[in-house]
Image 1 (cartoon, helix red, strand yellow):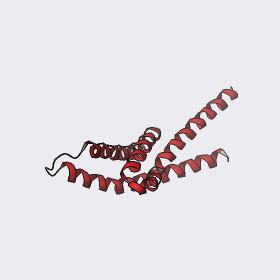
Image 2 (tube, rainbow, N blue to C red):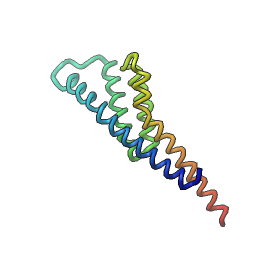
Image 3 (cartoon, rainbow, N blue to C red):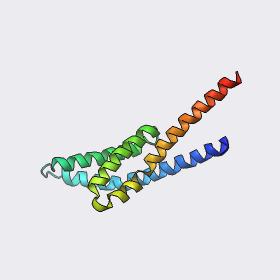
Image 4 (cartoon, rainbow, N blue to C red):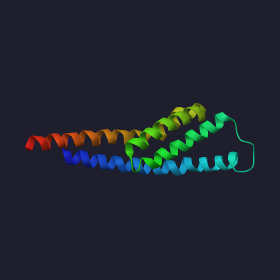
Length: 131
């Protein structure tokens, strides 16, 4: 693949990941807001520690989706780890499916960070060779 094509492909993947992350943030964020209001906002007793821990993972997953828009590697790692841990524990038999669908942007961002780093090194080597 030529450099122009690979850069264009990376740009397309980057925007697909961002739009997918935005859709996930809105979808899973609605659940997060509802559960926060239900468990922590209506004067009810604090839920068990396991529920609080899962809710925290859910929140971290959402943070990762937002962070990934600006810092792809950091957001990707946060969303990948927190999302996989949350969905595998909270979603029961749907855990693998929900995890897979929800960590796609994280995997794309991590892959793009690796691509960008390799491209930068390649450009630096080419620059040194021209001298």
